[in-house]
Amino acid sequence: MEATKTLGLIINPIAGMGGKVALKGTDGEKILAAARDRGAIPESAAKAERALKALVPYRSGLLIRTASGAMGETLCRKLGLPCEVVYQSGETTSAADTVAAAAAIRDKGAALLLFAGGDGTAHNICEAVGSEFPVLGIPTGVKIQSAVFALHPESAGSIAAKIVRNIPMSMVQREVVDLDEDAYRSGRVRAALFGSMLVPDQPNDLQCMKQSGFSSEENQLRGIASYLSDHLEPGVFYAVGSGSTAKCISRLLKVEYELLGVDVIRDRKLIEKDVTEERLWSYTQTGRLKIIVSPIGGQGFLFGRGNHQFSARVLHAVGRENLLVIAGESKLVSIPCHRLHVDCGDPEICRELQGYYNVLCGYGRYHSLLCEY
Image: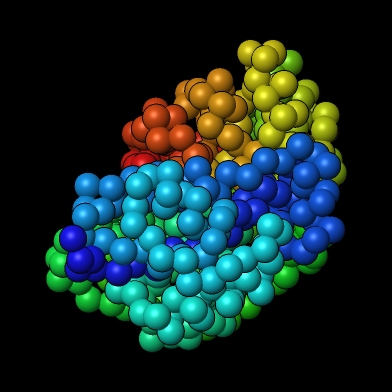
């Protein structure tokens, strides 16, 4: 049957590899090598597969233009999705391959270009296709602050399936930002607005661009930290998540911390700084681990955006009853519809984490927010 709808697909095979091993990204050959030395394994294709499964029922009327091998062809063949390879990549891929593949798909044409990666990949795609070619990001990277990504892989697949089914859909310009990873690893957040891209106007399935916290939160954070300090349980390990909000307890306790990593404290002392997913998993085996985490301002994500050390198995072992969610009230105001989100890589575990959370907003003050997958 002749294809009635053409999509584009680009997978960044190494996106997200640096997350669980506490490297905050995978930009550059040295960091990629370090990630592999720490035992990191590729996860981008598995997440992209979760998105593309939504297209399998419509494959008879579909053609996917993609790059060779791990950049798209392999997954299409696995799922039985008709594909045309428009760019040949090498065995080892780079940002240049992403740019070249995106340009080839743009030149050949597609109703929508799906790309799996993080902010660096979005930056590369934007460089290649500009602001007038329709795209949609499948979130598989570590840094995912741009507004061109779906909430999770299944959301991306749902949107793409609607396009394949010719369901009318308008498009909207949304922001692409990228971080300086070297500065990021040093605890300095240097994000720059790179440009914008055209994405399907499906606000319920798209994440918003990350917003910074408000200066008025300072007093609120002191109250949150004081309350946490007064209620720390003896002998319990606390994994303190990334970001300035979560680290309010570390500052109060005057212990060292990795601003953009995960640290473990117990009995008001630092036990381990900037831990990997594997190390966190070992702490879960004690049966005495709790997690202190703050949602991302402007997005509402608790897990799956910059804190991949909190993997599905770690979260399952800890249990939602041992998640301590904190945020200043001004941060909560910035979150669309006051909804929290999770994207830990395992849909079943994400569903376990759904429900209402009492978010600590000051000394003994809470707001109840719904967390959705």
